[in-house]
Length: 286
Image (cartoon, rainbow, N blue to C red; front, side, top):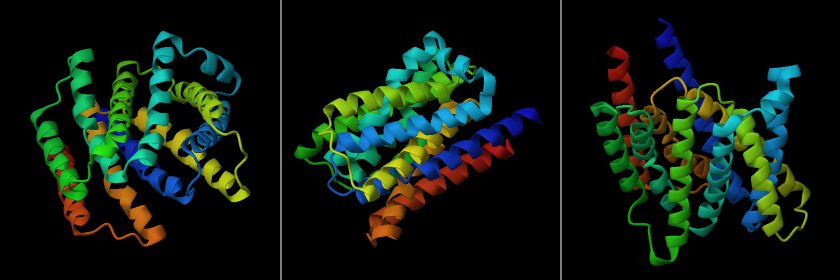
């Protein structure tokens, strides 16, 4: 029964992380015309502070050793995590959310492919079929949104997806790697880079509060939950559950701003949810 409980634990962590992460677009849109570097610098700073608290409470006297003892694999993961943090916000600023989500929907393919290369982990026919069906749902939802002027944003979204897929695989390949410490260093690196590129103007009190919440929720908590949960299930499955972000993201914006996602979004969302239910139900029966 231990493997079953472990898998359920992993799915729960990733599902919660996905709900939290899906609010990223809501936070970005709430910040209006604030530049991407200021948003990302503030998000990274507050995310790093929240991670320090998490590690201190969890590890107590071993907190310093945890933070500085991430090892060679950890220092490889740090820049990858920083890239995924920066490129997501930049992509949303440069192109539509739909374009970014289309790229992000390929995460299961990236993760499963990289897991096969790194660990010879077989994705399984069910994972491939469900991922393909989910991708069809994303395409239906987003429609033909990509235009010539969106190439930079799409390229950044692909870079974000690829870098995060590597992190998903590394979390499973190195189960002792503390992803909280990795994300702490990544957030600090992200803050340093983005602060240097920002106008260095202090945002308003409201914007600062939104940025702080943004950092704690999507960097300090969601990243940690997702990458910890990825240790307990297959990489392709983790990426598949994670694309629920594609459905929840537009719902947050609709709820907060009254932005109607439209019939294609509803149809595409139904396809994605059907693929996930079919995949997880059939696997639980097996």
